[in-house]
Length: 328
Ligand code: PMV
Image (cartoon, rainbow, N blue to C red):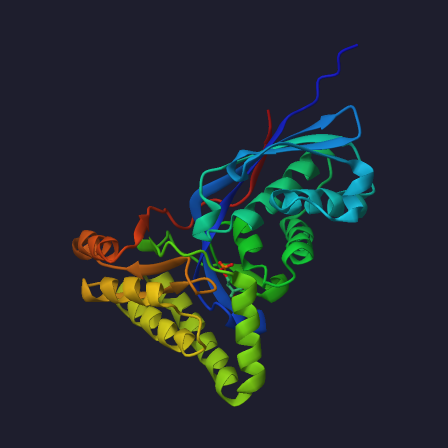
């Protein structure tokens, strides 16, 4: 008898942090948006007891692990988010099966657009469908967030929430608040510095600063919260001029905690000098991407200025759809 297993496809977007980085790790709200660079996961059951992963974007062609070895958690680095997600899913729902999982990425993990959280979300979404388990968005969030913390120890979970819910969201650590913001998206310009940031190190550095200078860093977090709440209003009203101003404030006070870098500053000042309404780092800092907004007539000028100082423009559409899962 030939058994044909159902193939499931899950797709989730990358993210960009708009406002509230670092402060969100300390309990304040942030705003992030889903971008049209997606991660795709294909999954089906196997008859044997192997989990086979093909993830070409990190050069893993056919990595195999036995189901019983999943819980040891000493996975190959490029496989850790997917294997940890499978292990957490099997443990939570008391199910198991051999699996064949293939991942395809529309973006480079170098840019810091959230490929790890998107692949984790896709894996859990695909498993839920494969094992016919009804999971609400918040349940997917909780399990994907636990997985991300198991692997990388730190993080607010904003990237996980953005991959699941899509759109543009107001978010608080651990999913205490996940609220869609009413917008059709922003005319963002994204510049990649060419430097890969180490998010965990930067979070640690800000935590240490907060311990050393609480009377300075805590008011910074309070100010970030004020900016986030004002930004929500300006995004909804499409007031790009005031929003740009908030981006500049936001960058300035983040830089005071030491998370900016020479490369980020170069791109940010080039954007501002070329007429951007505002520009800031996006995410942990130290490298990765900066974002800017500009009116239609100065957009090209701003992009050119960023490129001229060594930045790479990454074309993105914002506010896109979150996790989708279907069976082929
Ligand atoms: O660098 P990213 O995109 O992983 O963003 C980091 C944003 C932080 O607030 C510093 C951490 C977090 O998980 O919220």
